[in-house]
Amino acid sequence: MNQAALVIVKPDGMTRGLLSSVLDKFAQTKLDIIGMKSIIATEELAREHYNHLKDKDFFNELIDYLTGKLHQNKNMIAVIYYGEDAIAKCRGVAGATHPEKADPWSIRGAFGRVRTDGLFENVVHVSSDDDEAEREIKLWFSPEEVSVSVYPTDTRAATERTVWV
Ligand code: UDP
Ligand code: MG
Image 1 (cartoon, rainbow, N blue to C red):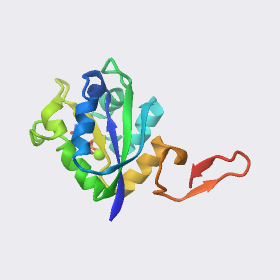
Image 2: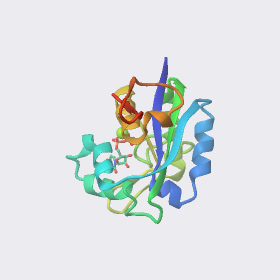
Image 3: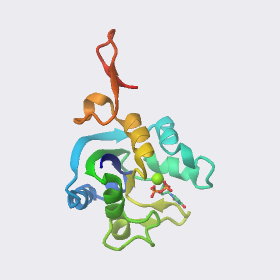
Image 4: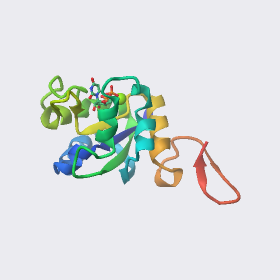
């Protein structure tokens, strides 16, 4: 079954010049790229993105991480991969959440680290299931920025803008 997966190269990956290495690794999945852009996470967007983790003791550090407060680069690259089993393929390439437990050939195993405060600085975000992918893609992209109509849309007559419904 074709599915979409959102990948975000987080501020540590950008600051350490890992963008091309990371994209090379995902290219090995042979999935299509159906959307890609540079994004900056405001406090509000970061909290929305990681809303399901709001009760964790590392939540504030995680928000600082995504909003770029821990690194030189604030901007991140968001990529939507699309194809057969996209989520499992992308999560496989990314590796386990904990960089020390990740396969050494995976992105997080090769480039991730655990900070002294305990936060996992693990280079990439990857959606973990279909519902999360849909929620995240609708959060970070507008329909016009995605080349395959993965989710239903509606065109508002007044503005002629197409919006997620
Ligand atoms: N994270 C962390 N410590 C933990 C769990 C998660 O620092 O014990 C951070 C890490 O950067 C991770 C992010 O929070 O990528 C989101 O956590 P999630 O459980 O969703 O892991 P992921 O889906 O990114 O593998
Ligand atoms: Mg997750």
